[in-house]
Every structure is written in C-alpha cells, then in structure tokens.
Figure 1 (cartoon, rainbow, N blue to C red):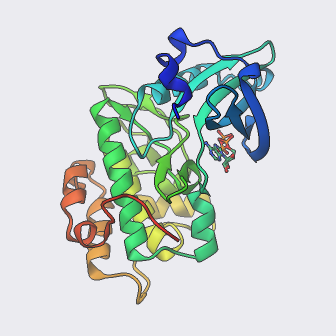
Figure 2 (figure 1 turned 45 degrees about the vertical axis):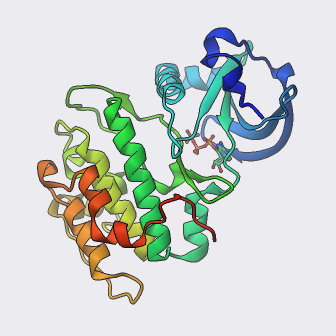
Figure 3 (figure 1 turned 90 degrees about the horizontal axis):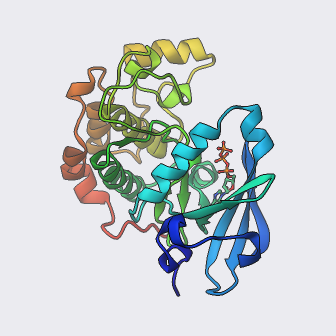
Length: 284
Ligand SMILES: Nc1ncnc2c1ncn2[C@@H]1O[C@H](COP(=O)(O)OP(=O)(O)OP(=O)(O)O)[C@@H](O)[C@H]1O
C-alpha cells in the first residue's frame, strides 16, 4: 500500500480534499484542533487527520507558526519523526494529513506504568537521539520535546510529533518558548541558545522515563526556575535505575551547553549500548 505522499511529491503535485477521506473515530483534541482517524478512499491508507479552524489561528495569531511547523515537518523523513504527508484547506478549516500513531501518547504509557524499564527508556532515548541528530543535520532545533509531543506507532516505535516550536536556523536563537520543566538554563535565562538545548532535554526525559517525574519539578514555577539554574539534581534511590543511567543523565544536565554530551556520544554511551533495542521497537 502506498502512502498519500508517494502519489505526488508533498503538496506540489497532489491536491487533496475532504472527499478523498473517510473520517473515523476521534483520536484526540488539542488546543487548536481535533484529530480523527481517517482512510484515504483510493489507497485505503490509514492516516490521522488534524483539523484546525482558521478562526482559531487568527485569534491566537499563530498562522506563521503553523506554516513553519508544516514546512519543517513535511521536509523531514526519519523513522522516529511523525510524517506530515500533506495538507489542504476549505474556507474555515485547515486539514493536516498525518501519519497515524496507533500507540497514542508516550505520556499516557508513562503515567500508566509510573516509569519505564531501562530497556524501554534507553530505546526511547536512542530513538530520540537519532531523530534529533537528523534534525540538527537539517538545521532544525525542536525546542519543545516533552512526553506529550511524543507518540508511539503500532510496534511501540517512538515518533516525534508537533513541530510548533521548532526553528530552522544556522544561528543562535533568542526566543523564549516551551514548558519550564524541560527548558535548558540558557533558555530559562533567555540567553542565546543552539542545538545543545535538545541535548539538555534528553537528560530531562531520560530522568523522567526512569523515575516517573522530571528532575526539577517543584511546587511553583519560580522554584523550578531556581532548581534549573542551580542544576539542583538528585537521584532518588531506586532499584530500577543503574549507575550507568545516572551517569548519562549527569553528563547531559550540565549548565555549560558546550560541555553537554554530544548526540554521537550519547549513542556510544555504555547504558545505551547495553539497553537500547536496535530495532527501536518496544513491546509492552
Ligand atoms: N498522528 C496521530 N496519531 C494518533 N493520535 C494522534 C495523532 N496526532 C494527535 N493524536 C492524538 O490527538 C490528540 C490531540 O492532538 P493535537 O496535536 O491536536 O494536540 P496537542 O498535542 O495537544 O497539540 P496542540 O497543543 O498544538 O493543540 C493528541 O493528544 C494525541 O493523543
């Protein structure tokens, strides 16, 4: 079966419309739209159709952001990045034709189990690392990697979704964005930042995957802020978390962004080598 994109390159040759799809059950609701399971009539290919109301985009003045998100996501081809096959619109709505992630949000898995095993956590971190290396090669910094933006396919393979906050750039950035818990010190302080912000986030996620909560979580935003700035990191005693895992986390949560472990070094780290499943799949 061919995917909608293989019929024509992106949106340039193939013009999609609502008639090309049978709409199925709702998959979820976001801030700006709803997502439905859908099937392309001709190929019977299953996709997720995200519907965004133009009125909402105008109200929140995010049409430029969405356009950027769509352009970035259509240009990326990686097994751990959710495909955006194309888009179309009518007078009121914009429709995004997305790869369907059968396993839903990684966040739900994490909440259901409390934390992941070392094998699962390492597999997700390795998947994220290869996907980010690919993004960085293309000069894309994601900047909003958090469990809610990570989906799972039918084999438990991680897919990065939601490029709303990502930027395509060769220079250091200054914009403030994202949820505080996952932000690197240079972003909290609004200093210039570069690709190493994603490496910090990998450290945060690795901690959260293994312990069930992000490391600097606090009662208030200002306390989280202070803890990030101090890199106030502690490891609760847990029989499930090895010394090697803690070593990797400590080498990513480093204030000086130039001293953080590189993506290549993450892939060579003993904890990843020992625990990550090379197929990238995780059976529950
Ligand atoms: N491609 C997909 N495959 C399966 N489920 C999806 C897919 N995309 C979204 N979903 C589900 O639909 C829900 C809403 O997605 P959506 O992207 O609109 O919300 P969001 O991630 O909260 O983003 P935003 O904050 O930008 O609105 C998600 O929580 C997810 O469970």
